Amino acid sequence: MSRRHRFLPSIRLVGVACLGGLLALGSLTSSTAPSVVSGAEREQLLDEREGFGRAAGEGSTAWPVVVVTTLRDAGPGSLRDAVGRSGSWIRFASGLRGTIELTRPLAVRGDLVVDGRGADITLHADASTDLIRIHEVDNVVLTNIRFSGGEDAIQVFQGATDIWIHHVTATAAADEIVSMTGDGRRPDRITVSWSRFEDAGKVMLLGASEREAAHAPDRVTLHHNVFANSSDRQPLIRFARVHFYNNHVIAWGEDGSGQAVRVGAGGQLASDGNVFDDRFGRPAVIPEDLGTRGYVRSTGDVITGRTSIVERSPQAVFDPRDHYAFVLDEAGESLRVALAEGAGWRAAP
Image 1: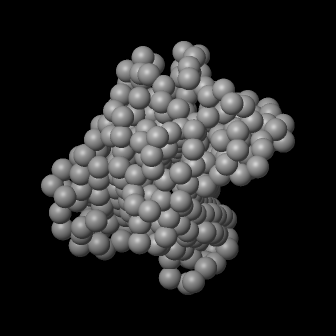
Image 2: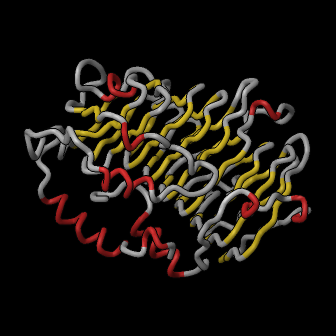
């Protein structure tokens, strides 16, 4: 596996021990909040950056810490108060555990790290409310948070740039779990990594229009994620250039209508070393006619079941190595195991 996660088995064991020390919902194991995040802790996280979003968090080693101390939706000590403070590294009070019920979306400012390591926080809202909006801002890191419900769980919109979403777990949004769109300004330089998305109808939308590139992100990396037991859009790509590598896609399209990855409207998919484990005989990757068809190149992908990957004009797909270096793990059982143990929210960093 890539060098950052070769220690995954030890993470799993430490996590079990830490969970045993947590108190009841919303309580703290300690009255002392982590008002200081050491340089080593910050670098440990930032060293895991990879892909188009690798510049997210630049400058954050010097940002002051803002501590979330309550599960209330708003007010002093709340996450809502914290995400409004640009230039901050947000942590949760040690052992804070539970669900923040949102009555309206969290509007994230730029130059922000939301670091859920050491806590167990779930964001939830009803189907009429988005959970987090990253709109018209730059330089945002979001890690180690759970998402449940809402209309969209995470929206990246309108020129948002240098965004990194890492080790999140998200389920069952009413519309998309992750939506990356624009309205004249394209989001750009985004990475989603080591996350888990499951039990949804539509998972990830990259581009809202079949006609206008300005409604789509430009460059997106999706790596070491698990997409499980969902119907469609893992992801749906319009216009964007997407590097999709070392992901595990499992059991999509049970309703008989979904595809795992759909690429249209001139979008480009570089698919490297992914595992697609089919159960329902639906396509794994297709260049779909969404206004125009997209372009697909598949290298080292593994499929099981009755599914297929359809390439289209692979020579027209961009080469990720022209943009950044990355470590590609071999698709197979070792990748399945590493992602089962390591993707999504973690009990301990």
